[in-house]
Image 1 (cartoon, rainbow, N blue to C red):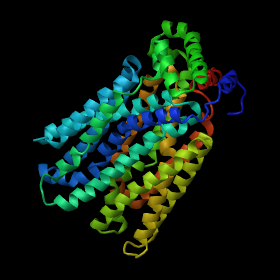
Image 2 (image 1 turned 90 degrees about the vertical axis):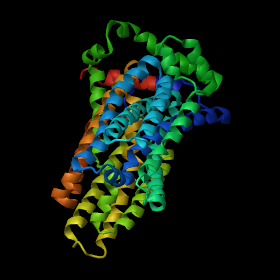
Image 3 (image 1 turned 45 degrees about the vertical axis):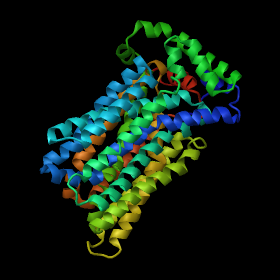
Image 4 (image 1 turned 135 degrees about the vertical axis):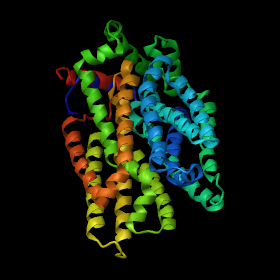
Length: 480
């Protein structure tokens, strides 16, 4: 698929080389660091419940259903935030949307930490979920539109690094705070309050960053768009890249004027095809079961045979492996084809799930090697997932959709991601109760379906500008 000659691939090759100017590289790098504080908040706010939940249950005297609602409402809020956030980002801009999300992150974190009642706590978690979902859509789109196509893979995937970094930070802070103040009934409040700090950093930092040059051009603010690009690229590259963006917008302006966003999606076969592909990528990323380990990792390790204290320690190790895998993956994303890495990742995940399921079922509960073999295989699964599918899914979702509908289409895909996440997270405890470690054999089967989906449907996106990809997909999927 990637060898089909098109005018799009020619266009991307016509751009002047990016060059190795440290000033411009540093500027883009600073943008990536600040914007991905949204990913850090995403990771911390979804991971903090792993250690705080038992303290919250004791404080409010919750039953099992009330306990489940805490995680479920955050994820439902995230699904709604993803759907609405994309449209807001298309209308008001990526930068403004992220600034507003930083405020919502702060309000949600503080309100959660100081909630006097269970009802207020649930509302606070739902509000926080809105920010998590909005950030999961807007930050990758912003990074993808600011980054040069040669470095887009590594820059966009830094957001995933910050997500797993936020989860690791949550696990680590929970372990430290829980051991120091575990006897204090309000210890969970300390854990949740920490999330307010990166929200402040995101708000202050985004005030100094530029708006997306592609969004500015889409709104007809061409002088501002070119000025941003000149601040991020060498002059000749900025002019050529801006011309490509403007040309694409002009070519499609009549189409944009004649159709609403929803009408265009329904009437254009190639856009419908891309949205279906995007939803599939999003769903299969969650169906690997990775977030079951992020939310219930301690409980899984206890069932593997570790004591509660040991499970808490090794849960931190899961977060550490996620960060290490992401650090290894970042430089590789710009070297290897996205599609090939995705096929490799799902193959490895399938094997890891099979091993977890087989060892968990076949080895006796009190076998001295059972817990360690399961830990090794779980770490293998987490490492493969966070080193391949985790960053690749967010990267490809930021690449495949057309500019004028990028926020809306991304919202659809990420809505599917969060709904799938909420379903898996809600069902996982019941699946484990019914199937034990046979649950991982079910995940292995789904990984096999994912391999089939990637092999048949997912296109290659490496080495092309966002504009050339749009032209390429329009030709490729014209008859869908």
